[in-house]
Each structure stands twice: as structure tokens, then as C-alpha cells.
Length: 176
Image (cartoon, rainbow, N blue to C red):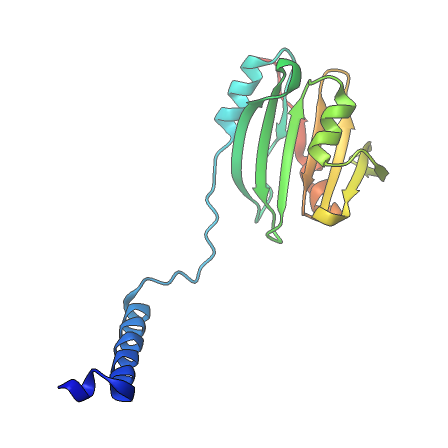
């Protein structure tokens, strides 16, 4: 027996047992090969946000085909302002997030959400001009629209056409 527990034979037996155990584990362990992005309904979050702010909120009128809404929350911004975040996995499986707030100064809020204060251009979406910002090191693209009572920001790693798709679906919801 000692011959199998020492030297090369002992090493070979131990290695075989470990490899057999790992192979058995891989054989019986569940292996999901399908993509799973959790879907999060944001309608209640948007409604609650609408009841807590003094202006009419903006939200997508419908979900985009092949997009998955996967996060939503309301948080405190600077100076006590409320901020609504709606996150999406796009059809190309990039990230896009819609953010809105009446935080002042609006330019500071937009710069913080975009991680940049440099405007690189404008983009027309539905006849409305949106500011474009880009931060290369994070590959983060951002569309910003300043309105009198709220600032709208769409940001993420999605390309410009996908961000514009989300912007085209935004509509103002009645107050209350």
C-alpha cells in the first residue's frame, strides 16, 4: 500500500482522483448556456417618482423591441433633488440609462451623469436637438436635453443610434 501513496505513483493517483472529481462535477453541474438578463418593471417607480416631484416626469411610452429594462431606482441628488434612473440592456446588449432630475445647476447634473462637461455635437431626435457628450476612456456616450423644469440624460456604452432610439420613445407623463 505504501507504494501507492509515495513518490510518482502517489502523485499520479492523487492527480487522477482530482481530475476525475473535477470531471464528474462538470458533468453533473447545471450549465446555463442561455443569456439571462433580469427584467425589471419600472412603471411603479416612474409613478412614485411622479408623485414626489413638482413637475411632469418623462418616461418611455413603450419598451423597445429586444431591449430589456433591467434596473430602476429613485435617489437623492444634490441639494435635495430627486433623481430617476431607468437602466436598459439594448438590442446589441450594451448598456443605456435614462436619468432625469430638476437638480440645479442643470449643467452640473448633466456633467456628473455624463462623466464629462465637453459637448462634442448635437443630435436631432424627433425634431428636437440633444447635446452629445463622449468620454473615450469609458466608451460612454451621452445625450442631454435641458428643459425649463427638468434635465433629461440618456447615457451608456450603447452607440448613438441606440441612444437616439430611447430618446425618441420618451414622452412627458401628466403630473400626479
